[in-house]
Amino acid sequence: MLDHRRGHLRRGAVSRASWLIRCAVLMVLSVVVSVPCQAAHPDDPPIKAAIEKGVAYLKTKAGSQFGGYNALCVYAMLKAKVKASDPTITGVLAKILQKVQNSGAYKPPEHHVYEAGVDLMALEAADGEKYKEAIASIVKYLLAEQLPNGSWDYPSKNNNGDTSITQYAVLGLWAARRAGVEVPTDSWNRAAQWYIKTQLKGKGGGAFSYHPAAEVAGDLDRNPSHSMTAAGAGSLMVTKLFLHPNSKGLGAPAKPKSPEAPAAPSSRAKFGVLQSIDFEKLEDDKKKVRAEPEAKKPDPAGARVAAGNIDGSVKGGAAWLARNYTVVEVKGLQKWPLYYLYALERMCALAELDKLGDRDWYADGASYLVGAQKSDGSWMGQGAALGAQTGSPEGTAFAVLFLTKSTARILNKQLGAPDPLGAGMQAGGRGLSGDLSLVQEKNGRIEQKKVVLPIDKLLAELENPKTLNVNDAQKALVEAVQIGDREKLIGQKDRLKVLARHRDGEIRRTAFWALGRCEDLSVVPLLLEGLAEDDVGVMMEARNALCTLVRKPRGIFVGGRPLPSNPTDNVPDTASDDQKKRAITIWQQQVRANWRAWHFRFRSYQDRDDLDELIFSSPKNNDRRRSSGR
Image 1 (tube, rainbow, N blue to C red):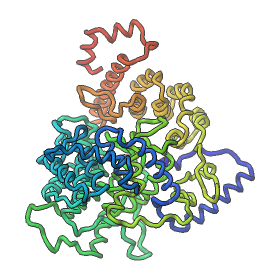
Image 2 (image 1 turned 120 degrees about the horizontal axis):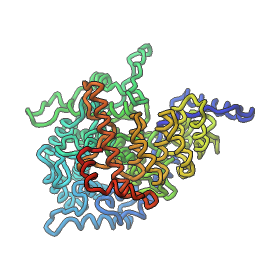
Image 3 (image 1 turned 90 degrees about the vertical axis):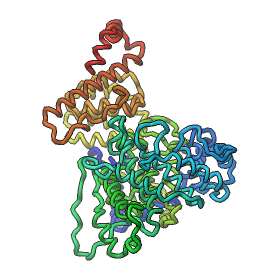
Image 4 (image 1 turned 180 degrees about the vertical axis):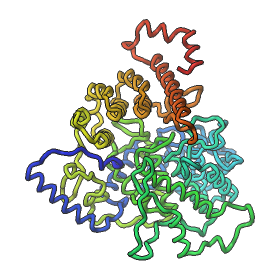
C-alpha cells in the first residue's frame, strides 16, 4: 500500500551479486530523482490497460444492476470513449427513458436523488441534445426535491441534508446545464450556502461529514470524512461555475519570488505524513497576477454566495485532505476509497490542483488502482470487503472515472503528455518501495515484485523478542496484506492468536488488525476479549477488526445509533482526565455489550453451552443488561 511503502524490515547480509544489482538500480533511481518526473497520464500503457479491462468488465454488468448503478456503469464507459451506439449502453439508456412517464414526470424506483443525478450524467454524456426533453424532466424532479436549506436527502429522512446525495444532485444539474437545460441560479446558490454552513469547524476544520446537520444521527455521521470532504469541496466548485462563471480555480502553488527564498517548513498533522498546502499564500499570489472578474461587477445584495467565500471553503477542504493525505485508507463513515478517488479527481480538476501538498494525487491513485485491479478487470467497491476474488460494478465505475480523468475531460483541461518511456507511473521507480530488494528490472522497466514481503517472515519479526522497530513491522504487514496475497494471512491464524496475547500492546493491536481480515468467524471470541483491554488503542483495534470481519463498518448500534469509532470523539477538549476516563469506560461497556449480544445471537453451534444459554436468554438478565449498558 502506498501510504506504508516506506516502512520495511531490515534485511540481513546479501550476496555480492545481489549487492551489485542493488547498486545498479540505485544509480538508475538517482538519475530519475535528479530530473523532474512527468505526471502519470491516462494513456500510459499500464493505466490504459487497466481502463480497458475495467470497461470490459462493466460491459458484462451494466444493465443488470439496480437503481442508478446501471447509469453509473454506462457513464464510466462513455467517459472511457465507448461509443454511445454500443448495445450495452443503448439498453441502459432505454431503461432510463422508461422512468419518464407518459405525463413527462420522472419517477426513479430506487435511489431517488442519487439515481436522478447519475441518470442525467449518463444521458448527457451519450447525447445531451437527443435526450434533452428527458433531461428537462429529471431536472424538474431534482429541483422539486431540493430542501429549503439548499441540500438534498433521502425522501422522508430527518437528516437536514446529506452531503453525498447533494453532491450527486449537483453533478446531475451540472450535466443538465451542459445539455442546455436551464437551472435556476437560486438552486446553485442555496446548495453553496448549505455546503459552506455545514463545513466542519474546530477539530475537523475544513473537512465535511456525511450528515452534518442531522437532528437524529449517529456520531459517525458527523465525523470528518475523506469522501465527503472531496464531495463537498468539488460540489462547491461546480456551483461556482454558475454563480461566478468568469472566476477560476485555486490553481497550483505559485513559484517562489526568488531562488534565495527559503522553503516553508514542513507541517505534519497529528496522524498525517504529508506536507499541507499553504492555500492562503497560494491565493495571495494568484491575486497578484490576475484581477478578480467578479469585483468589477458586484452582485446585488444577497443574490449569491461570494466567490471568495466559496474559494475559502474549498481551500479548507483541500488543506484537510492534504494534511490527511491518502488514496486508500479513508476516514469517516463513508469508507469507499474508489468513491473517494472519483470525488478527489473531480475536486482537483475543478479547483485546478495538480498536487495535494507535495503529492501527485493522480499518480498515487493510478498506481494503487493498477495494482488493486482484480483478474476479471473489476475493483472492490468498499474498503471493508477484503479478500474477495471479484469486485463490484459501482467500484469499477468509480475507478474508471478516476483513471480517465473524466472531469478534466469535461472541462477540456490538458491531461499532460503520456510518458515517452511507455512506463507510466512506475517508470524509473516512481510509485515503488524505497527498499531496493523489493524492486526488479524487467524489459527496461523498474517494477514492483509481485509479493512485497512474505507474511510468515513479517509475523516472525513480530514474534522475535529482539525486534526493536515494531512500527516498521506493522506497516510492512499492512502492506503485505493489502497489496499482496491476502489468502496467505488465513493460514497464519494460529500465530496471530498467540500474538494477540503478546505483552506489547502495539503487537497485540497489529494481531487484532490482521485477525479482522482473516475471513474466519472463529476468531470472534478472541476479538471480544480484546474489547476488554485496558489499552485504548488495542481496544479500538479489536472493535474495528470485528466491524471488518462481519462487514458492519459502523459497528453494532445502541438504540438505533452507531457508537463512534473513538471513545473520546465526543469528549470536549476541556474535559478533565477523570471525565475522559469515564467516557472511555462507558464506551467500552456499550461496545462490549453490543458485540457480545450479537455474538450470542449469531455464534456457531460449537460455541454454545448451557450456561451461556441460561445467562443470555434470561429475561431478567436481558433487562439488566439493557438498563446498565453492560
